[in-house]
Each structure stands twice: as structure tokens, then as C-alpha cells.
Length: 554
Image (cartoon, rainbow, N blue to C red; front, side, top):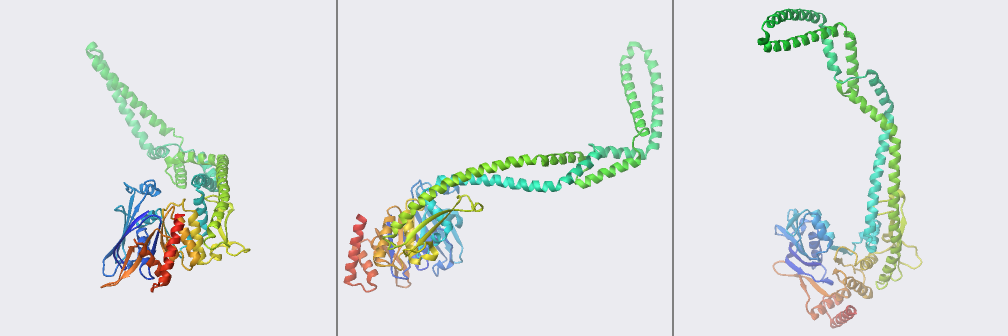
């Protein structure tokens, strides 16, 4: 619950700390006393948009601290852990600092955080409902969440969301494959012609180097042959010399063994040189290519390399890539069929889980509508008819929450056709519908504290008393803070604060908890009669408090 709220330098508040209690807490006071400042301050601590105009005139900055006392099992602690925020106990402190220039800083347990994170955190802690703050109820897109919250369908929603994600992931793969197939088929003829050209050309690895080398030798053919001839003649002279050496070595006998071995090695190398020279001469004299043929071959290879955006030596690799691509195009129908089967399987599983959830929603919608109708009776809306309609959506509207469209409809007059809330209900009726809904959702919501700002506006008498009773009932499960001008509502509260202005050198807003019965009697009497409190008003106030005490005891 919200344990305390400390406000410093906000509008007419100098410094103020309010220690709250559980159950129903009423805040009353004359119009303009500053009740809205308290709610604005609480909103700041919960991450609402800041306004430099909230900073008290003559001060540099303002601050608000909201201190919460929570069970360690509260879901907010899981959220804190996910965001690397520490919380060693059940105490959670939200702090917001606002400068006169409009800049603000946010802290959680004295750890700096973004304002957006503070706002998300606040949604786990408090719900604020104003007189006209019925957007959630008016927006049909929120109705499905309210029904699911009431039904406690967390497990079913997780299954639906999981199967939806699986279906959409495979569907995306299928769509991408079809797109790629369409593009591949458009290019298939181009790839086939490219493969034919490369097969006809039959490029070899390192062919460019070989051709360039051969071309260079062909251009120097005559000179090379002459040089080879001279080289062979010189080798012949070396061979003649080696013969003379052999004759000399033969005369040495065993003493020339080492020299003979060396001569054998040298002779072998000479023979390799002779063989290499003969091969070069043979290659040049018997070359299957002419210079023009080599030029034509190089031109064709370069043209294909430009076409495919690669080097000549990469053409053989490119040929394999194109062959593999064509093979994939030929076999992709099988891959497509396999993926289509997977889509059908995951879609079938999604529809199964979504239909199961839909059936449970329909069953729960009847129970929810009946309970809300029951709550409307004491709120003086006994002639109204409330419907929770669960209808199937078109397939293109299916989503991670299922296949249903949920809408709350009402008819405020007997015999009339039920219609959307925003077209049928007045502001006061919407507030009471919201209250009835909150009463039945009391045990399911995440936030343990609810704030109602003048939810009883525009009603009085028995209707206001009924609103007070509903708030008291809701306070059995939640901490309820109600800002009210209704004496019937204030009388139902277990805790009562009065907001007032003090005059002196400067006007300030102050808030005091009414501890004594006669103090509460005086405040409720003021609410009944106005600034001039009569004995009749006091008597009526006593009666209200007695009745409320009896109701609470019952």
C-alpha cells in the first residue's frame, strides 16, 4: 500500500508528509483547498508528465516522495529485478525532483531511473480514477484486458501468445521464401544462359596467369628459341668438360669416392636443366595456341568476369554458385511445401489454444455481466443492463490475445437496445460503471492502491451512500483513497483527512488527519450544510457516521 507521501515546494505546499492507512481513506476539504495538488504531486511520483508551474514560487526545485509498503511477493519486485534495480525489503520509495526550469529527475530506492521507467513502475502500484478518467472503460480495445484480468486467464494467454509467435515466425519465413522464389524464377532464364556460357568457356583455376605467361613467351618466341639454343650449346660444353673430369676421377680409384659422388649429383642436375630446356623449346615450338587465340581467350574470360563482378580466377567458383542456385530453384517447390505444412500445423495449434480461451471468455463474460448488474443496483442503476459481448474477429485481425473482440455494452433504460458506453452513459453513470467494475476486479488487479477523485460528483443522497458502500467494499481488498465532496462517502471511510488553506505571510495548503469523532462530525456537518454549520447538520452527520459504522460492522 501507499504508506506515505512527502511533498516539498509544490504550488501552495511548503513541506508536508501524509502517513496513509489501509482500507478506505477519505480526503475532504473546501473547493480550492488543494486536494488536486495532492493528486498532482502523487502523479509526479508515479512518473506523470512534469510541469514547471508546479514548483512553488520563489523556490528552485520541488520534490515528491511516495513510500510504499509491499509484500515481497508483489509482482513489482520481479519488474525491479528485470531492470537491475535493488530492493532488499518490502519498502519501495519513488522520488521525483522538479526544477523551476521544468527539468526533472526520477529515483527508485535512491537509484536514478528514467521517467518512463518510473511511470511503468507506478502502474504496478496505484490506479488513479478521476471524475472523467474513464478512458479505459470507454476504449473498447481495453475491454478484452479487463475480461481476461477478471477471468485470471494468464496461463491461457501465455499459450495463445506462444503459439501466435510460432505461427507468425514460420509465416514470415514462408512469405520470404515465396518472395525469393518469385524473384528467382524471374532470373532463372538469365542464370541458365550464364551457366551455358560458363560451361562453354570452361574457365580453369589460375588460367589467367598461365595465358598471360604463355602470351608473353609467344611474343618473344624467336628470341627465346635463340637463347635456348645458346643455353643448350653451353650445356654441351659443360658436358664435354664433365667427361674430362670423369676420366681424371677414374684414375684416383677409391681416393676419389667423395668427388665422384659430388660429380654424380652435379651430372644429375645438369640433366634436369637439359630436360627443362628441351620442354620449354617443345612448348613454344608445338604450342596449340596462336597469339591471336590467346588474346581471344583472355578477352572472353575478362568479359565473363565483368558480367559476374568477379576476378577471372573466380569464374569457376561463380559457375558452381550459379549451378547450385538453379538446383535450388528446381527443388524449392519441395521446400515450399514443407514450410506450408509447418504453417498449417502451427496455425492449427494457435486456433486450438485461441478457441479454448474464447470459450472460457464467453463463459466468464456471462458471470462478469451478472456481477456488474448486481453491483449496479445499490448504485441506483438498477434499470440499466450491462452486457459483455465476446465476438469472433476476421482472420486478418487475429493477434497474440486471440481471435475475440470484446466489448462492454449498456442500456440505461428498460427495453432499449444496448450500445457502446460512450454513446449511452452520462459522466456520472460512467463513474458508477467504473466503480462497479473495480469492485468485481478488486481481487485480480496488480495495483493494491486505488485513488478515486470525486467519483461521486453529481450524485447525492442514497446514490452517494451507495457509492460510499461500494468503495468500502472495495477497500476490503485494496487500499482506497477517495477525494470527495460527498458526506455520505466520507462517512464510510475508516480514515479521514481534511485539506485546508492556512493564512499568514503566505497562503499554504495543509492536511490533517481527523483523529477524534467530534472532528469528523464537524467536517461532515460542514459538507452537509456549507460554511455555516447548524445543529441539524451536526445531528445528520452523527447519524451518517452511525449508519456507516453499522454498515462497516456488518
